[in-house]
Every structure is written in C-alpha cells, then in structure tokens.
Amino acid sequence: MPTDHLSATFAALADPTRRAILGRLAEGDATVNELAAPFAVSQPAISRHLKVLERAGLIERSRSAQARPSSLRVERLRQATDWIETRRTTWERRVERLDRYLEDIQKGTTQ
Amino acid sequence: MTEQTPVETGPQDQVVVIARVFDAPRQVVFDVWTNPDHVAKWWGPDGFHSPLDTIEIELRVGGRYHLTMVQDQTGAHYPLRYEIVELVPPELIVLRSEPMPDMGMHEPTVTRVELHDEGGRTRMHLTDGPYTVSEHAEGGWNGSFGKLDALLRSL
Image 1: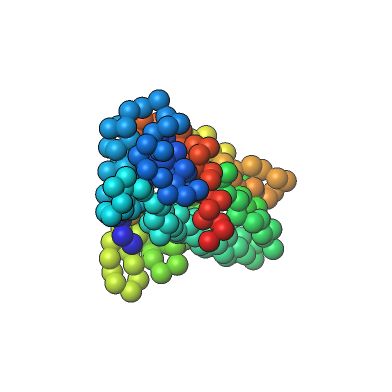
Image 2: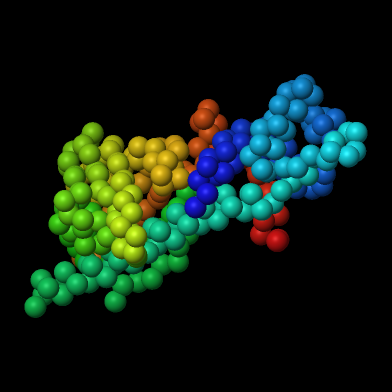
C-alpha cells in the first residue's frame, strides 16, 4: 500500500484549517481570496496551507487562471479512507479467526 | 453458535469498532488474548501467521505485547510492537502501538479490548485507532470534514 503518499495525506489532514479548506473545496473550486474569507488567518497563511495540500495530492491549483483557483482531488482522499477500511477489514478477519479458535478449544474442553 | 454483530464504525471513521459475542467464558477469551500459545493460533489475519517464537507478552502494565506477522505467500515479516497500558484481568487489556511505518502507521494507535461477562458467554468490545492523529491532538476530523465524508459517499 502506498504508505508514503498516505503519510503526507494524513499529515495534511491533521490540521483543522486545512480540513476546513478541503470542506470548502468540496463545494466547488475557490481562489485564495475566497478561501481566506471565512478564516481569521492571512492570505499568505492560506497559501502555505494550500502548498501543503497540493504536495499531499489533495488539491490541484490552476496554472492558467491568474487567481489560480484550487480544486479538490478526490482520489487521494479516497486512498486515505480506503486505507482505514483496510484496517477495519484486518480486525474483522482477525476476530473471525479468534471466534473459530475459541470454538475449537471450547469443543476440546467439553469432549 | 456465535452471535454475529455488525461491525460498527465511529462517527467519522477514524476508529475501528468491533462488537462481538463469543460463546466462551470471559477468562478463556482473556487467556486467548494474553497467552502466546493461544495468540499464535489466531492473530493472523488470513494470509498471515504469527510464529510462537516471535510472540512476547509481559502481562503487566508497562509490559510488552510484541509479535511478528509473517505473510504466508511471501514470507515478509511485519513486526507489531505494543505496550500494555491498562490491564484488568479478565476484563480489560489496552495496547498502545509504537509507530509502525512499515504498516503505514506513523502515529501510535490504541487497541482497547473490553470483555463483558454475559452468563458464561463473553461480549467483546474492541476499538482500534485513531488512524488520523493530529500532531497537536486537536481531536481528529472536525465538523467541516463531515462535508467531505458526504461527498465521498455520493461518489
């Protein structure tokens, strides 16, 4: 599994402002100005957050338009949620085996 | 027969939650979690085995809970290193992992196993995570992230 990608993704997701930015971008593309509006932080601070998100593959920034609107890249986010799903599946299967093993040893003790 | 309980998920999916009733006394289930001879028989998961000689369990708070999962097909080794951080035999064991970058876990995770006696059967409540730990412990995925969850569900 692509853990290096994922550690960058999770590190990027670890910050509440960045998650809020992603939440805003889930509603549609936005420029730095538009993204900065709801936050009590400066535009340069927003730009730094955008750089982190871009490096993590979570957003793309337009190279053509001057305002460089950002857009959400859903596939990377999906990889992060898929990975958590993998952890859940691992535990489900493990507990299945625990269950079967308990049945085996219970049979052994009652015979 | 063992009651099948659907796997539940936390509200924002960062913690794995599994509830299950086993048709076995609580002390037996606790032993199966804490005795290496037993752990070697089930830890897995499917496609893996955990050789007995890799399992080290010091049954005390602060003690080790170490084992190595070996992938059956490739022989690849995946060591797991936990510390026992809470222990109330036969009711509770709480394990905290060391970060395991090879397993994609760059932050410690906590596995909490509660065992409840239900008249000779045992209800296990297991939580494992979190899988998105804030460096600043700011409490996981906040409300604005719920929008993303909704988005992902709609895809």
